[in-house]
Length: 402
Image (tube, rainbow, N blue to C red):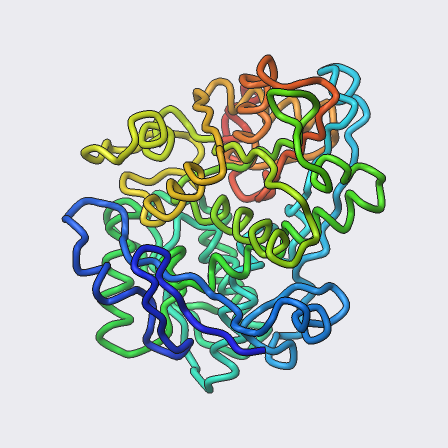
């Protein structure tokens, strides 16, 4: 397959090569304290009919050949039906996509696997990134399997379990006095100065491309469950049973990846319509939801939420994610920390799934929006991280001090 980077804003194309992250012309227009502009997309240039023959049994088009991927089992996570939640909530088509089963316990492994494969293909020995915790521990773990040096910039306030994961995997941990936004800038300064590969979420187009794999898996597994009909025909939503996906959102990269996967499947003719995708945000970090309501991003608001994995002041991928939401009729729902912790407890006590607060925002968002959804709809809650990654918050949810 032939691939290129393409700017969705101006249409400029660039080779997929080390050192290229943004569209130069569009990135230069970014105002300070605004989401990144000029974020690039990976696009295949072959005729659509050839794609399925060249990408392997799963039929997922990716810009790095499978031979470069590290021998670690990323993806193919369970899609399962939580019987008690279905009955209690009155949604018999409710499913959980459980990415707590990834090797490092986080959805971020999907992006890390592709970035590591790109590094191996181009004989790059080091990857650097900023993170609130999950991307750091993910890249550290996948990097260990791939034989790569990983340097992470992590706020000192990140949960201890995530910091310990980074160290266990053998990565270099640089703790930052400040939040994720400060860590992001420090990591960029490091990668620019040293020339190492940046895995910064959204900034590197491969992070979105890696995360799209979840959409292909969803279609495959829903077909097996006989529940993919809502994607295979036009209609649904306001006019009848629909297809709804609830995604935790901070920077908006996972959201963008889910959209990218379904866009690819539309191009391939595997689905007939786009599902409605919900950006689930915490009240203390809701820049994307505010922008969807007003039409654009306003001045940054300091983040303050227990859901550290979706806590950002400036969503770096925000402009790209907002464009996807606007183009495809997506929605946003904002929930309080109390609603997130209640949802975390509901996941655990009703489904036997221990999810971290950011993941629990997906259930909290669904609970808040359920009155707007036909009970016969297929509903997917994307669970992106294990509750074991943040025991302090989990203890608060059950009234215990650690």
